[in-house]
Amino acid sequence: MKKITVNLSFYNQNEILIKQVNSWKYWEKEIRDQFSFCIVDDCSKTPALKVLNELDISDLDLSILRVKEDLYCNIAGVRNLSAQECNTDWMVILDMDTFISENLARNMLRLSSTDRKGVCFKFNRTVPFDPQHEKNGQPHPAVCLIRVEDYWNIGGCEEDLVGHYGWTDPSFWYRSIGKIHAYTYMDLFLDYIPEGEADIDRDNSHNKKLYEHKKVSGDWSTDFVRFEWEKQK
Image (cartoon, rainbow, N blue to C red; front, top):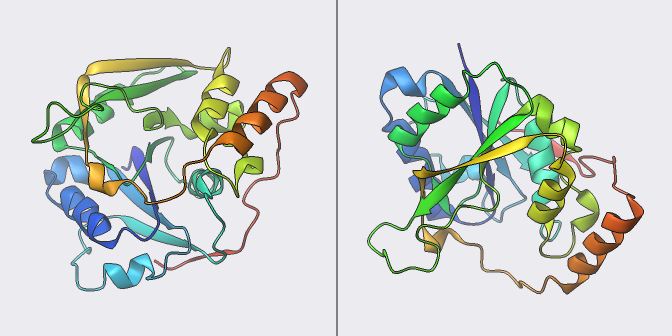
C-alpha cells in the first residue's frame, strides 16, 4: 500500500532529473514500494518523459504530468497540480535542488504513521562535500511532508504569484498559522545540491508587495491550476 507521494517540480534541469529518479531507484525495495512518485514538468524545453527515455523506471510507481503553457515561475501552479492529482494521504513537496536519502525516506514513513491531523514535517539540509556552504545545516524553506488534506485546508499555494519570482513559500506558511503545526527535524537531512537550483531572475519585489497586500486584505485566491496540462505517464 502506498503511503506517500513524492511530488517533484521539474523545469529544464535534465541531468538533475535523471539523478533524482536514479536516487529513488536505489532505495531498498521495502521502502520504495510504499512511495508513489510524481514529476510535474513545468513546460520544459525537453519533456521529462523524453529526458527519462533511456532510464528503466519500471520499478517505480511514477506518474509524469506536463504543463502545456510556459508560465514564468509557475511554482504555485505546479504544486497545486501535484496535490490535486495525489492519490495518497501524504505527500512530499520536493524541489529539484534537494534529494531524499533512503534513511530520510524511512523516517518519512515513520512520521506519516501519526494519527494526529494538522501537523507537517520539515527537514534540515546537508550539502555533500561542502560543509562550509551557507545552506549546510539550514532547514529547507519549502520541502515538507504534509497530508494532502492539510495542504488544501491551508488553501494550497497562491497562484496570483505566478509570473513573478518569490514569496510562494512565505505565503503558504503564513496561511498555515492556526491550521497546522510544522515540526522541523534538525537531525533529519535532505541532501542539498547547489547545481539543482534554477537559473532564473530572482527579483522578488513584485511578489513581496503582493504578499504584503494579501496579508492585510485576506484576498487569497481559490483559483487553482490555471493552465492546460496532460498526463504523460
